[in-house]
Length: 127
Image 1 (cartoon, one colour):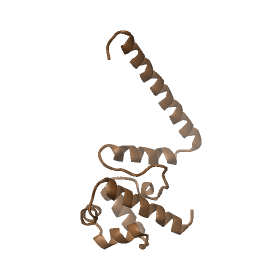
Image 2 (tube, rainbow, N blue to C red):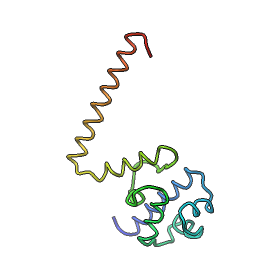
Image 3 (cartoon, rainbow, N blue to C red):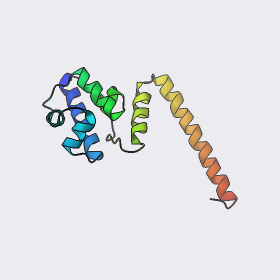
Image 4 (cartoon, rainbow, N blue to C red):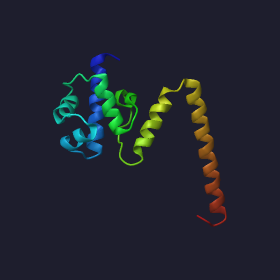
């Protein structure tokens, strides 16, 4: 991915996080510990962030910096427990394919197990 595309992804991700959290520019900049004009410039794509700024923002959001740079098929929403799921997605995507496959298999087995529990509860009349 070229540099300009990477900046666009970062800008979009940060903007989604701010909008989903319903932050004003001022409140978001205070949370991120950067200036309001910096947040506005990043979101408009007109700001070439430093590694230090990226890490400061990620630490303030309690997420891994790489998550802010990932072109994800979902919108980033870090409200409530969604932060946990976002970090889990980032961790999953960093795994080698073999480990991702093992993880998917484990989740499928868990789903089948839970479906079996649900069926057993329905058979006994307990929901």
